[in-house]
Image (tube, rainbow, N blue to C red; front, side, top):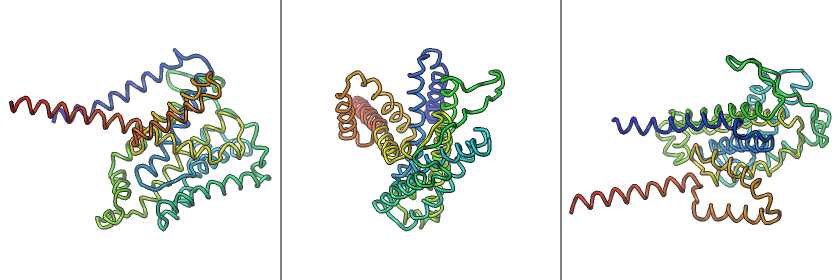
Length: 336
């Protein structure tokens, strides 16, 4: 029992230490551009984690995450500009509106399977982008939305008044959002709801036989993933202060898929590792000019070829094999 308790507490201690280290990053990394890369990594982590929730944990292939991202961004930006609402009000509203959209796109998942559902979500993402492009009276079409205000100053205990006029405060806001999303997904997956998601993914018919309402859990996973992505979209709008339909094309959806696959689908840590690596590594390779794209693409192919379960999945498998071999040697030694 003591060993089991130690195994449960180890990840919590590791996560607490990681968050502590991340809190001190701006003390070491003061360069605004480096902080910008870290903020962009946080956005990638949220998108990949949301994709992982609905595809990795529930088995519903979704390749249109950019649609929820765009809806969150436009909802928050337009509410802030037209109704003068503060970011702290528009942020949850953006997540809520995107979640409602998640219910709409989740309904086809009740009838469509795998490949056909994937195509449907791609088409849905394109429909949202074209709507934003052509609904000029509201979204300003290809001109995009300008003049999006920064988050209003906020007063925090001990820290005092926080004004969002520098990258450091945006970094901490992004870090808080990432911790919130990852903690929510981790809590969900450690609850009966998470076990229902996994049962739906592994064998839908068997899950229904056991009394699990797979239709409900499919739509719930879409709704949660869309809500988290919509909140990331709201942050994007108030961080960059400008959005346009071109900011939310298929490339953003493909990036969420790639990030989750490279980091490790079906794991909590995978999208975090993938988000940081795939955002930061291209910047480190920028000095290599045109060669960086070849190196970047080759690295992705080799990673997926040798570690099909992603970096986290590959490391976990390697450690497990090493532990099994060590255990076998120990048993063999005792037998002799």
